[in-house]
Image 1 (cartoon, rainbow, N blue to C red):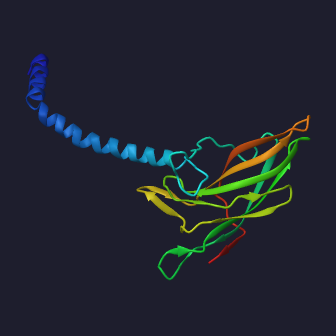
Image 2 (image 1 turned 180 degrees about the horizontal axis):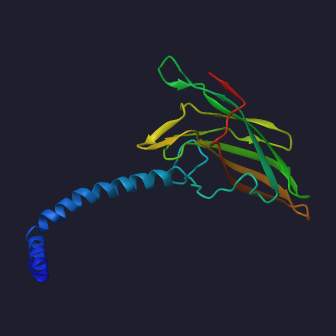
Image 3 (image 1 turned 180 degrees about the vertical axis):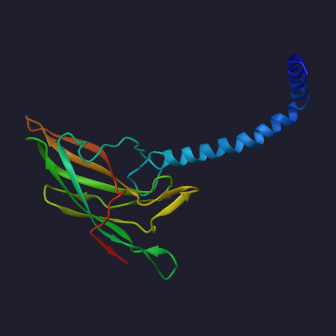
Length: 204
């Protein structure tokens, strides 16, 4: 069969079965796009953090974080001290679990910093699982910060996705005293990954 005739036959068949082609294409591509959208949405949502008990219309959502050394005026130091695994209570719910950290900071240079406080959130990537901890005052001496967490890790929030540990997010507020003696309130948002880390102590 001549080449031109073969091409003509192909396009004629394609035109005659155009509805079938469109249907098959939709049935194949649409689910793939839906799954991709679901995975992308879950991944992005896992990095959107708020530092309140419940989310409302006025809740501030934070997506931009720095590392422990990303604050200009001091550097944070965190050690994972203890993991308490949750256990089933009388109602069948997991309860009593927590993550405990030792937290301190070291000033960068001769800045005058005071009233350093930290509000922590443990949040699982790819999911909405999160737990808010109480505000903790920290200093240049190590202090313990405990965050309740009643989810047994690792978890698989989505097919082919396994998460070993939650991410520790922190809202850090402090006062910086200027040369003129004025106190300026500062807020920084810090992220600390627990991947590859182990607590010094694990309690069942």
